[in-house]
Length: 121
Ligand code: HEC
Image 1: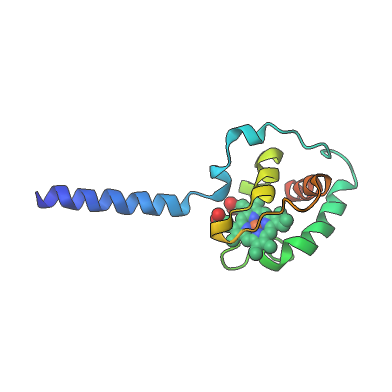
Image 2: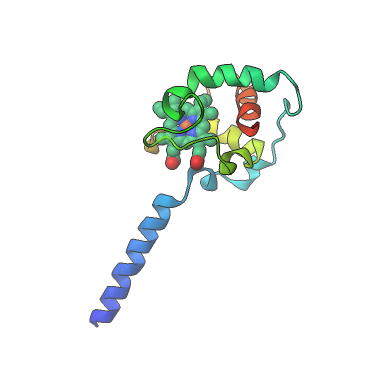
């Protein structure tokens, strides 16, 4: 009996740990990934995106995308290699209960420009 209770406690603890480490991008529905970035390959888009990033995102994620506190670094493969549509959805919806605001108020073209910047080196 004790063993069964112990196994139950371990299972619950593992489930909680997994939920915490399961990152935000993993929780975005795969259907969002299919949306193509209209700015992909446009030379000026990353530059525009960089300015928008400095204005809206750097206060939490850091000027060099290095991350701060709860805000994860964005200059990392997880973000760079994510589908453009996934990043677009992440910016649009945010992750409100974990401290990432929604940026649905930024016009769509500008959100895509930020995505282009995030996917650059
Ligand atoms: C108020 C602070 C704050 C601001 C401003 C902010 N973020 Fe975040 N962001 C967060 C936090 C906190 C998380 C982690 C959310 C989670 O784990 O669910 C996050 C997560 C992310 C992620 C997912 C990264 C990962 O490793 O899962 C991306 C992408 C992202 N933010 C992009 C942006 C962009 C682009 C902007 C500007 C348009 C921005 N964020 C502005 C706090 C912020």
